[in-house]
Length: 225
Image (cartoon, rainbow, N blue to C red):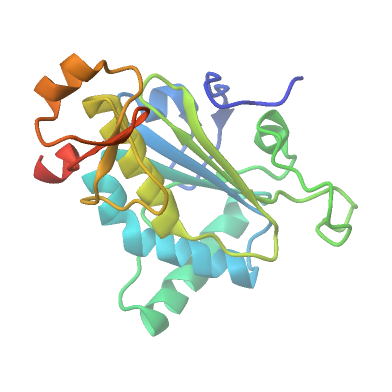
């Protein structure tokens, strides 16, 4: 199977989760979605990550984004692990409640479909020597198109502020025909999309500044929405 690329349709699948069985495309519906994988339950980095996603879930909700985790263990393990995640969160960042689904993938069916398996770290394997997943992130839009892919090594926790930042950029770009410059955050100036002519840009973005023939910047229209 060829590797997934940005712009591919996210492969659909059926899976058991901590919130019941799902079909991915049906579960996403008309929302955006973040699918993110973890090497295993009861591991320290993963526990901190899931606690952080639980804490940030209102930020994902505000953007119309559903979140779903995946770990290479069975449902009974996930259910026990969630208690640890909530306990850790209550001790470090206030009340934490994992109220998003976690996919059970002990046989690596989904991990293989999405090419999430570790081929670098020889220690990132289960007792049978089967590779665990790395920390992969997929952002999927309402048309079920993959818009972002990031893979972190098992040893490194993710920055979910960065994932929210990219979602802000993608959603603003889809709505306003802009792109975002280096280190952009919502509210910073944006770049007028190269596909917008100068005449059209003057109408759409009356405060536009032209720094180079191909680099035109304007105020972030999404900040005013």
